[in-house]
Image (cartoon, rainbow, N blue to C red; front, side, top):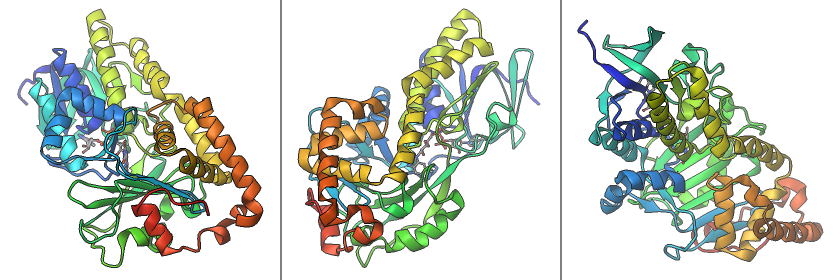
Length: 445
Ligand SMILES: Cc1cc2nc3c(=O)[nH]c(=O)nc-3n(C[C@H](O)[C@H](O)[C@H](O)COP(=O)(O)OP(=O)(O)OC[C@H]3O[C@@H](n4cnc5c(N)ncnc54)[C@H](O)[C@@H]3O)c2cc1C
């Protein structure tokens, strides 16, 4: 084998986590090898919903501006949710609203490559078709070998190889397998009836998970179903759930209409939710899905992966400056992302269990949104997705509307039979469903 250059950092995996870390490390002058087993453009199953912190980083890289100019970004400006009892709130598109957190639908097939190319533009070496198969630490260097025999050497290793976390598991840093699963199916634009930008459906059969519909800029929709911990459907049952409950879900059927053309069969991919207890080691960091940096209440992990990657790069620059890449020094990374968003994951997991036991909580949120409009929905969305801390739910601006809505719901229970389960769900009235998905706030039922 030829003598290989020694990189400051070798990164395995060029998803949003690895490529973002590569960008900020290379920008700060580090010599970075970004190894990706696939060849771009590569697909990654996802709901394709990019939340504000990810969009901020994409903006810093110049990526969102490029994609927006090309018409590849669908800003999510209309939409909302349908609660377990069929209460819905969907806001119309009122353009950009001040203070509303930005969300955009962008295909992973497109955006992931752009992030990796942005990293290459600032000096990272992007090496595609490089599937890392073996990593060993010796003499202060990682020896990294790929399936095809190529070798790389680095002072530090970042494992950003996704939810299966094979590298960190092989090193014994991460000890368990992925803990949940989600699906994606693209539906061809012009063949369906869905005209909002994004709607989350919370039917009882999947709680505390949900079914999501996001519309892309070319009119295609991304139909996803997320199984989240605390519910009664095990990950192994998602496929049959898609064929039965989701296929016959009246809201999904109303959104798709009778002539929807799927562009692919529904596909499943693993989720690693809730944060791993250890995400660092000697000269080693674990990032993104590999580190379980995905919120257990939503299954969303792009923005958390990117935020953690940016932090990791900053802390690594400092560690290089101090000449100390020990596990003790790098534990600062684990503490930093836990402080930033990881601690909220235990609240998310508890909230998921609560939603499963008391679906009325989501009815309450839908009713509060009906009463208080899009600004309440913005706060609700930001807290659910972790863009703002979950403690926002306890703030007066959320807790008062939620408390009032709960009282309203409880006092009207006798008439509306919300508590009596599926029987009380809207008689799956398609015209209501169409309103919920297409127009604006539906009335309380
Ligand atoms: C169906 C589904 C829907 C989702 N929807 C959303 C959503 O709408 N919004 C959101 O925020 N999050 C969503 N998520 C979560 C989101 O996809 C992840 O949190 C995000 O992809 C994490 O980025 P990552 O870079 O850590 O991992 P990944 O995106 O998985 O990237 C890992 C990369 O590593 C590469 N790789 C793997 N092994 C090796 C190896 N041995 N050598 C070299 N390269 C390797 C892979 O090819 C891949 O490119 C969804 C997840 C699923 C499964």
